[in-house]
Length: 253
Ligand code: 13P
Image (cartoon, rainbow, N blue to C red; front, side, top):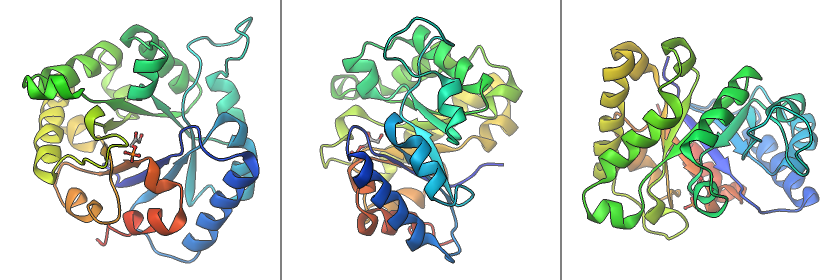
C-alpha cells in the first residue's frame, strides 16, 4: 500500500551532539501523537548508530544519505549498505541531485547502489528531478523518465514495490522557490503513469512519491493535498523541530 511519508534530509549539517539532540527532541515531540504519515530522518553516517539507539525507531525511521556502490573491501572512506543496515537504519537516500552534480554519480552507479541497498533490506528513497534549463526547455518529463528507467527499471515488480521515489526539481532545492502544487501534481501523475506502463497499475498506485524542494510548514498542506503527492523530502526545514513538525502535521487525514 502507498504510504504517506515525511522524510528529513539533514545533508552535511549538525555535529554528532547537535544531531543527537535534534533527533531526541523530535522523538519527544512525537511521543503519544497519532500521526497520519511515517516520519523518517536522513542523517550523516557518523550519526546513524547513536541516533538509532536513542530514539523510538518504530516511530521515526532512520535513513542514511548515501551508501557505497561496492559491497566491501579496499575502498578507503566509503560506507557500505551493509554497514548502514548494521546501525539500525532502515532507509537510504540515493541519487540526490547534490550527489549526482558534485560527486558525479551516474545512473549506472546509482543502479548498483540501489541493488546493494535492497540486498541489505534498506528502503531506497530514490531522488529524481530536472535542472532549471531542462524545465524551461519543457524536458522535465523526459528527464525524470530517463532517471527512473536507467537506474530502476531493471528491478522486478516485486522489487520495485519497495522503492520510495522523491521528485526534487533541482531549481527548487534550497532556493526558497517551491514547485507549485499544480506543477508537483502534474509531474507526479506523469511519473506514476510511467510506472504503470512498466509495472502495471497496482505497483504504480502503491508507489510512494515524495516532493522535495523548499517544502515548509506554509506550503506542505497544499502540496500534500494533491492526489499524487505522498509526502515530502525536506532539507532545511528538517533541521529544527518547530519547522519540521508543521510539515509532519500537514497530513491531517
Ligand atoms: P530544501 O528543503 O532545503 O530545499 O532541500 C530539499 C532537499 O534537497 C531534500 O533532499
